[in-house]
Image 1 (cartoon, one colour):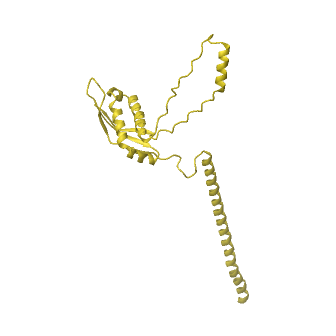
Image 2: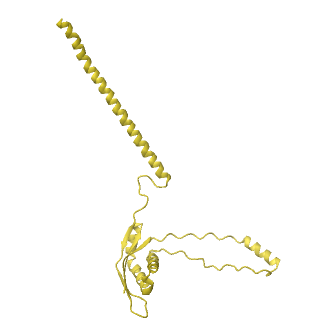
Image 3: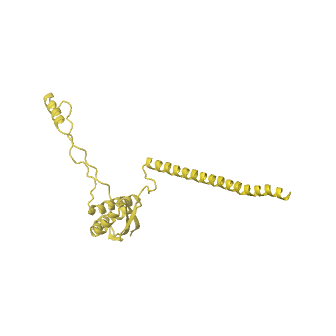
Length: 211
């Protein structure tokens, strides 16, 4: 009797490890499937984000704009152009640019730049510099005066004289016909090429004293 009872017990003991191994394999398979699905979802999400960024014109993973570069300058202390009283200005500026090469050029041409800015500031009267509009105008002029030694030139206005319109009754039909032919035969002028933007993007005042 004892031998007959021992046989089923041994068979059950042998079946138990097989079932546990089978369950373990099923669990491992589920974990791998979930991991694969999560990886696939992450890949698809990254791909969609990259495509959306490229559609907006910004490459994915890169900065949308370059960080600005600031070039501080030594303070300017000058006598102003006031005639009724002796006025003085002490002004410090910091130039904002985006190209590191421009920063090197500014250092190379610093004597010429300071010369231009000293002349510019000393030509102002105190009343011009005390208003907010006057400070904004000075900042624009400093940007131009700084960029000139670097080889940049502002856009020139069209100074060519425009032909005057003939008054009613002036000239005969023959003269008019000849002028029409001349205007048709004359080649059209090509559009003037736009100059590059000013390398000095902004001028920031770090000190502004008028006394």
